[in-house]
Image 1 (cartoon, rainbow, N blue to C red):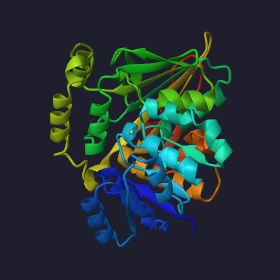
Image 2: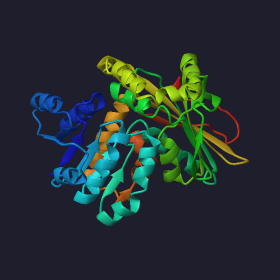
Image 3: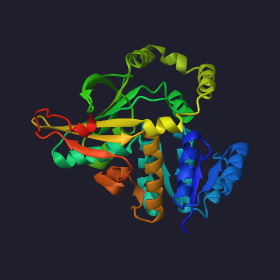
Image 4: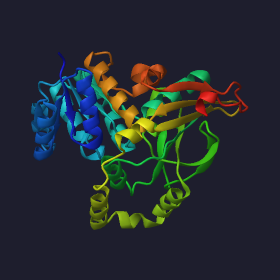
Length: 362
């Protein structure tokens, strides 16, 4: 049976993914850097464990020599992805992760040729952070093949996990990003606000540097991409204030203190995850035409777990080409519809005018 190693398996999201992988019969190897947390999880789940650090590429490659696929759940991925990808290239191991970090996705795309030469698949962003919007982007591009612009967005404000908070803090001083003429362009945090109907009336959303700025471009070839997220007024004000407070976040002592505060929050409860949902919106346009489509998904953590394990299983089955891949590029726009509880696509019926939203979105 092909072997799966889940790195960062004892984090909040990693533990959910590890349990789901076990439930689906994948028999994962649990792995990470924290010996005590790993030992506790190994005893709890009855799975094999493997502790290794990421500083030495040779050590990482040796740890992966008998592994068919790594599923990286250890964020911030800016601290883990490069070392694991290098280890995978040296050992001939396929790589999947759940990042939503643009620099990480871009760095992995840079290894496309090396991965193809090594016969290795590199598939980042197999999570809520990219899968729904990446698939929606392809659906929109198929509806409007000449599209020059994509705008994508999500309406799902919820309590984040420790790992999510730490990832945000790790990248707090990087500002925003959009895609212009095929190139990444830095913009201020919360650079633009737009009123968007995600399926339950218009709500204000701000531009966010989410992974789809990269994945949607690579999947569709559309040169201009913006990604929006609904934020309550206090959060929007805080994001805009960050433009002026950025030097404060560069202080190591401030970062350390914020991460310790973040550490008191484990993540949403099982009941909250079962009750949660998200609304995904997308618009493709040219100078003369515009099409809009929407999705509704379960809670973002539920989607992440389902998407990550489903992706890993397909990669293990060697159903994915070698080299850098995006979720929808590998599996097509209907991949998201195969995940449990996803409803869509809900298409506006005419290219240039709004039409009533499906009652399923109400």
